[in-house]
Picture 1 (tube, rainbow, N blue to C red):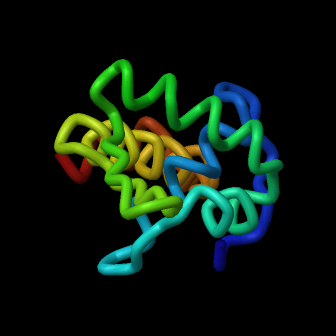
Picture 2 (cartoon, rainbow, N blue to C red):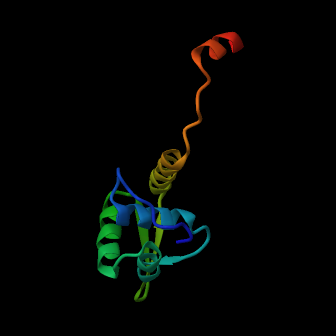
Length: 107
């Protein structure tokens, strides 16, 4: 994943990195092994998480022989987009507010 590892205070780090990796993949085909590597986790952890996501309608897994291609569903894309937005909001610096008098004058 191109993004550096972020400090997570609201969500489980590994699962979030897996979903954000799938989201940022564009047209890339994600295999469980490459997804695990991109998310910085193990194959087994990624496999189990993807199986749970598939059961909940968040991902689909297409089997091509021994290879399993993982994709986000529409629901999964919405969830990953929300997670990305939350991360952006958490990382954004708070803009200092003008004193109350200035706000009243500008209103």
